[in-house]
Length: 493
Ligand code: MN
Image 1 (spheres, rainbow, N blue to C red):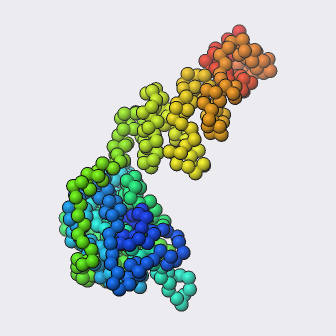
Image 2 (image 1 turned 180 degrees about the vertical axis):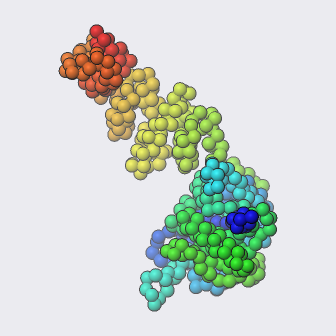
Image 3 (image 1 turned 90 degrees about the horizontal axis):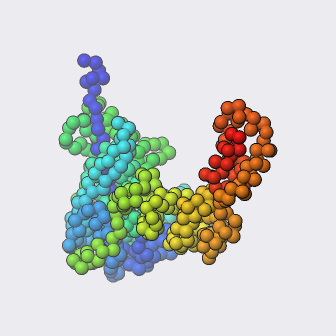
């Protein structure tokens, strides 16, 4: 046997703890505003500053959002869950403990389906990543060390911001899968409206638990946890680095130590932050200041009734009911607002126009809405105006190019006018009047004797040139079918 045949192959085992900042207006246990980028320490009160004698009160929206995300992921929603104290000392944690949920979190179980290109086979792959549980907790403040080397600052605006922590089972095997999970989770939290999912602003960040084991083994080996990874690129780099580091330790006969690690984006390496850390180090106990969280059947029913269609169902509708291709479906289901708009538009037109509606939304309506910085619900052109617009193209009254290049922008400028009226005003109706077209064809033939001679010698590809010239001369109004016949007749005579 050669050395390569005996070499043990390792697989990487990855579990995630994803923190999602909720899009509530106020904090988890008091009325301070939740706002990114404000002046430091302007959203603080006696509760977020942990003055003695103050009492927290749970934000109902946080509980609603946790329930909504739990339902979207197929979790079981616990009827009763509890807030606990997780004790540790840190300068940006004034209370000396974090309010979180330990033994009985609000959601348990559930799963997220991910889609990715398998790095081994290079094939599109679908995989189910199981969720262990989701718990509610609060964020800490921020320590700022990089403004003045001799001083550290504390900004407590973020202290007490509501978070959901989604803890996965160790089902992930590569950076690609982690990337797909985070992308899918970001899409879902935005879709159900519980968070903006903005990783750059820290609304979504993940701790990555990484261990390795010989391929084929079912045991788990000691894991390391890389803290607060806030970009997918860093997550992939950290996983690659850790897998290689742990493998070289094991291959030398050593043992991986259970450490909490920091990832340094500038070096691409992980460095130990603190050594072995277990749950009992935090001395969790139920928070005596907060009552149990009780999810009544009527509350649960209310949340269920407000749930939008999930992305998977939305995709199914676009592909199966409206026959749209995958590219269009992906595009139209990136944001729930776009899907809602597309669905409402599609339901109001004839089946022959489904694809045209999709093209119109993707190529014209979305770019225009972006440029105008407006929501689709405020789009200046109504669906009936837009249907009229599409009818003009479908019936051949206005050419595709004239409709898109001239009619659409004009309608946007003057949304009070119907598409037909505007086409008339701009004189865009196509002309299939043979007398009008024959005159133009004749002019084009006379202007290009050289090309006519070439065509007649057998260069049939020049037909396109003549068509183009006639189109130009008619200002795009020549009806293509009739024109084609007339051009052919003139050239062949
Ligand atoms: Mn946490």
